[in-house]
Amino acid sequence: MDYILPLQKLIEQFCKLKGVGARTATRYALSVLDMSEADAAALAESILDAKRNVRPCEVCGNLTDRPVCEICSDARRDKSIVCVVEDAKTVMAVERVREYHGLYHVLGGAISPADGIGPDQLRIGELLARIGEGDIKELILATNPDVAGEATAMYLARLVAPLGIRTTRLAYGVPVGASIEYADEVTLMRAIAGRREMENGFRTNEVET
Amino acid sequence: MDYILPLQKLIEQFCKLKGVGARTATRYALSVLDMSEADAAALAESILDAKRNVRPCEVCGNLTDRPVCEICSDARRDKSIVCVVEDAKTVMAVERVREYHGLYHVLGGAISPADGIGPDQLRIGELLARIGEGDIKELILATNPDVAGEATAMYLARLVAPLGIRTTRLAYGVPVGASIEYADEVTLMRAIAGRREMENGFRTNEVET
Image (cartoon, rainbow over all chains, first blue to last red; front, side, top):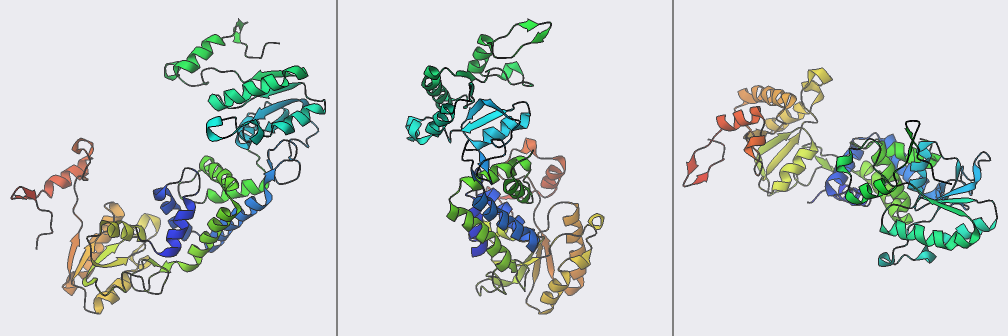
């Protein structure tokens, strides 16, 4: 495919975005050409701006444009409970629910020897330092429900066990709104194993204490 | 959804790309944050560069980074035949086939009174001027096979009829490689109406002269 050079270069750059192939990149490049001069400049500027100003929070590792993120600096947040996640995307997902009022800790990945990621590559030392400050009573280990995420949760649970901190894991089960017939076997097995009593006709889904 | 401001702004900008919704824009914004500083700068730069340097060819209206595009300035191209298309994307699609060696004329859209686009909004005057120069013997009207494209082809065919120039239209039919059972009724009707003799066991698909 021989496009004119500036277009070719733009297509290549768009290909670097996650999940964008040549076809989609071409559509985006042409859509940039269709934009107003101002919109194209705003897009370019906001890319530079985000890259320049967004960094990890010094405390929890979440994305922020200040030294300490909004969540960590919010006095109304419950400082006794910390949700441990792999990345900032998971923080956003949990925040979207608007039901969790504790803090977060972003590990920056999960333990995966195959990818050369051991505990030392993750922000685990920082987590232990936070625990050392004495406020934290519970860690919710919200790493992903895959092999690496499980291994990381297991590792962390063992690591903090001697410190007398409660560690919990998100419940496994069938996704709400989905049809049970489409659930995979492992999920269904976990959903059955994790079944709850119905109380007054309602399903309880809290962690047992 | 309250993301931090630079991220929120970047998401909004990505939403301006054709076919990008909030979810996809968020994925792209986060993928910009994962990029190296250099890659993010290159993406921003190539957006500005493309917008600054890509413009319509003075002759045919195709996208180019010079006053006259590569195709129009290529001496090996057959100047007696012009493929009339709605936009530069169609030029790229036809060029990809590597079978067409004539020139192009980009109209910049199709006649669509509902969208307020009449013949005056299209580069039809420019086309007549090119015809006036006397080299052109045939126009291939390759506007899209939809209502607006058909209307435009019809309009152009009538307009140039008195000038003694041959006008042709792309063949309609079932797409190669597709299953006939999935062809819509109009396409199938056109495919039957446009059926060709098999010669020596091969299907001929040239325009009758």
